[in-house]
Image 1 (tube, rainbow over the protein chains, first blue to last red):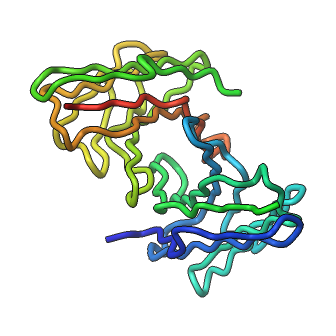
Image 2 (cartoon, each protein chain N blue to C red):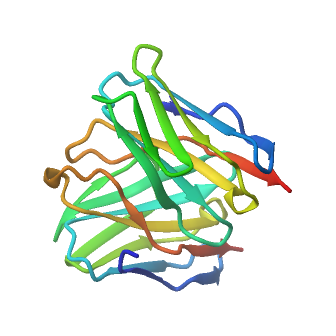
Amino acid sequence: DQQVKQNSPSLSVQEGRISILNCDYTNSMFDYFLWYKKYPAEGPTFLISISSIKDKNEDGRFTVFLNKSAKHLSLHIVPSQPGDSAVYFCAATPSGNTPLVFGKGTRLSVIA
Amino acid sequence: DAGITQSPRHKVTETGTPVTLRCHQTENHRYMYWYRQDPGHGLRLIHYSYGVKDTDKGEVSDGYSVSRSKTEDFLLTLESATSSQTSVYFCAIRPPPERGHNEQFFGPGTRLTVL
């Protein structure tokens, strides 16, 4: 049973436009959410996170939105750049000592 | 960048042979993790460790064992490799959760092929 779901395996966006990656979760105990970015032949790199006490966190071109009532979060990338082309993983945890639970990932392609 | 390395980076082995992958960190963090990444499955947790000699199973632990005799090293062993264990394996470390950190930092990965 998938606790973290990324329902779009892939997304294609034109350079300069907004990329929106979505993630849904089922475990109401999750209270910390993260996004990771992964290039081929490299390990995932941490991108941005959000605590359940917030509904938005922004870092440069990246913004994560959290809707706790819908158990949904999204990552917005504005403006999208070709270097953003990668696989993006959503992850969640109840915090404390519990390991992260990852979604299956969404492959983003930014077309010049 | 977090000081985390994995060895070997690539390995080809035959079914039935034992294989050990090594993860080494220079950050002195208690928490270390082993994941595998497969198409259509994302990142799945195999085993993790919360201190020397303290380990626990993850979602896909069958066929794998781990050992942690030193803070800096976390070993993943496939006692008898099978073709279904062909995958890319990632190690991750995590700063102390009590400091409010929930991020994990990943190594570069080991690509394992079992023929």
